[in-house]
Length: 160
Image (cartoon, rainbow, N blue to C red; front, side, top):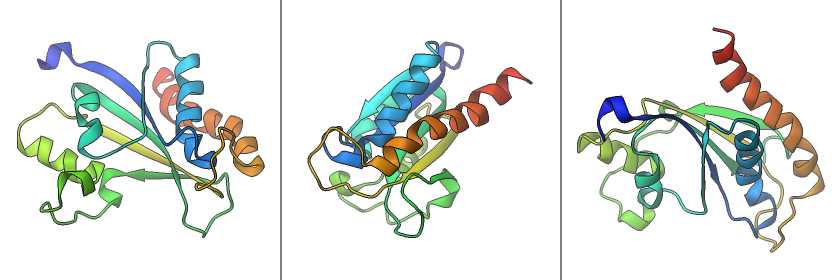
């Protein structure tokens, strides 16, 4: 894909839609994509090499996923950059490779990877119970999280 044909922005919702709070990234991404139809929605239950072909060609990726640190209340929104994740050995087998390791390999091979990647991680409570619903604390935070991401990523660009 040539640079002039690159797509602008995609929102990547990660998670498993049947593992309770693990689905929160997908739920937030869907809400944002519904509000901004010009933003491409990508949903994925896997990461690493499994999703790299989905993100090649975009200028910007907004990645939304769950995180369980145990240090924050469920429903807390964290924001990271790619630089926040330390590089690990690139000798890991592909099925164990993180998104960030795969991104580095794609860069080294000259693929047109996104120039900007913003990572939002939502603190979760339960990710091992089979349920299509998030826990009450996480579910109640979804509207506020959605508004915050929209304000940070889209309204600031509109006002420039």
